Amino acid sequence: VRAVDAFFASTVDSPPSVVAIKGAVAMGGYPEFEGFEQHDCMEFLTATLARIECEMGAENAHACPSRLNFSWRSEHRLTCESCGDVSTHDEEQCALSLALRVPDEHNVSIAELAERYFTPERGLSRRCERESCRGEMCTSARSLKTLPRVLLVHLKRFTTEIVRDDVVRVGKIRTSVRVPGTLTFDAYVGAGG
Image (cartoon, rainbow, N blue to C red; front, top):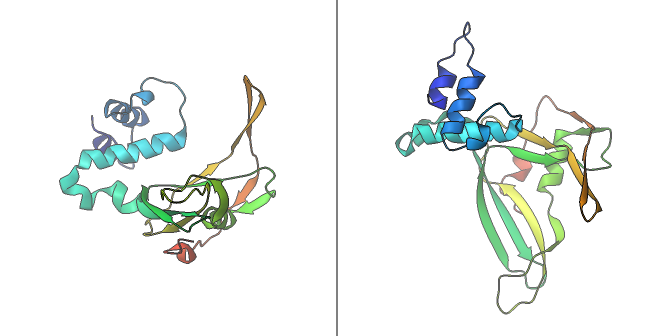
């Protein structure tokens, strides 16, 4: 059973079988989804979208529902703070992962989290790629190259704290997040820092 078939065989009276979709994704190169163990929802969604794209094949990429609806491209620029050398990486994504921080306000909005994501971040540790430069700090900036029809937002709500060398404490940030009726990303298209 292919994931595409399992999903699109559904009707109003017969919703898609989650078991069939999960099984098709597992057999299609994602064995971590075999069996009945609990898994991360976002990882499963992105694996399912990738599996559908794979099943559509390169010759049908122009008509792939995963790519047409959820795929977008961004540019990640790293600028050496010593010499100004710029390294760019083109990235294709299907979800915008926004991190909540402690302490975040009790009522933060998706727009505020997106603005934080696209704001250039200075003072990151990274050795410059230019041989003549000994710089070890850079500024990281992201911008959008294309926009998706449907934006998937992944809220990263977990924190980790190293208590001792052998003990890590994991917590969940329970901040409520406001979702506006309209969200625009025009300011981040081609902004690249």
